[in-house]
Length: 233
Image 1 (cartoon, helix red, strand yellow):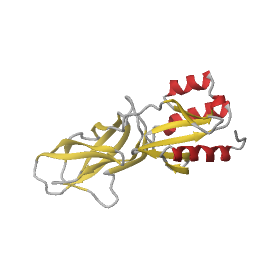
Image 2: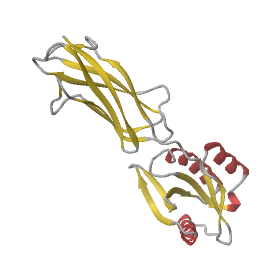
Image 3: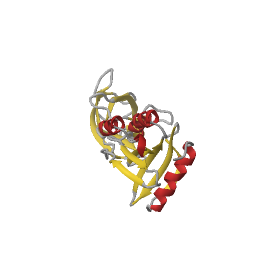
Image 4: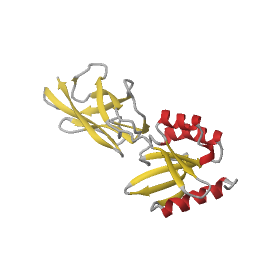
């Protein structure tokens, strides 16, 4: 068994390719993160981190728990020599839902534990009327909405944008506050990402109740929309 991690990773890549995987080494995901390799087969993308000792395997299992939430991979595995796949390594992998891949002394791969498949990002909208007059607005004034965006899935939502869709009496300028962006949105639970949105009401708009659509999008989640009534008076 090689003592050099790079040579060990090369052995793992050769074994994966022999098993029919397409393998790419040193893959960067979402800026600061880097995977030792990505193995693809049957349209399933597996991220793999490689370590040569027990402590390294334990540390990478914790790291993989973050990486598996990114949309770049479907599953995450930590790979090492089979001799270091001890009870504590197996127990932590099971606890975190991270897969384990071992390389034997004879150069064969053994899939010791499966990776948990996470639910995709799922966006929903909430919120409330902004101040000072809530849903009552004047021609030439502003309509405000305190948007609350939730991610109910396990995967991180990427490039999230929440925005007003101006129509009818509602208009926006080039540099308006009608749109807000967030690079990454983790699973939110009951705590939402909040953003204050504003647009203008056309001068001369007749009194009445008008709908204003609020929408949220992400690269890896379905769009969500909500239509809010505003009373022009």
